[in-house]
Image 1: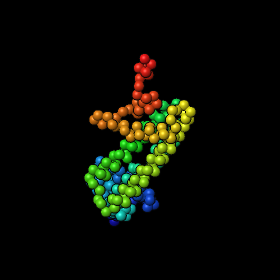
Image 2 (image 1 turned 120 degrees about the horizontal axis):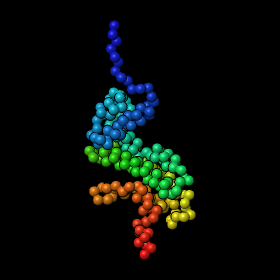
Image 3 (image 1 turned 60 degrees about the vertical axis):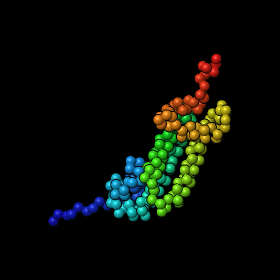
Length: 206
């Protein structure tokens, strides 16, 4: 007697792990399709049945809100910033930090743009947006502290307090695409301008 193959079941894991697995599968689809992405597409990407998605999340709105929270979460960014050796020259430390933060800001911006491109269903939008604002503020403060750590070894040589310089540096990174046509400025150039200003030393000498 030939057994009928059973339908694939979601792998045994905790409810929280399952939610994280679904969100991880949903994020790239969300960037590609915007909020028009379907729960069926997400389920297929995660290798599970669509019903499993709705056992993990009450509805699509809750799933999209979880995707936004995941995009704002910066634990992995902080880990990378904490791993930057403090015995490197300041320019090297800041260049490494700028590349890490640029990748994070790109991902966060892509997810936020995708969510707003097609409009969000409105039942819980207010509470989700409020939660996102809080998450963004917390992530910003943790990033600020990580940048202070990278600047601290050179505090005595800097013109402004490291706390203020960390804010300025992050602001420069967030405006990286401000050029004509959305052109990006290389992180090395941003770090050089941040450290040495916009005036050519040769011109200043004359």
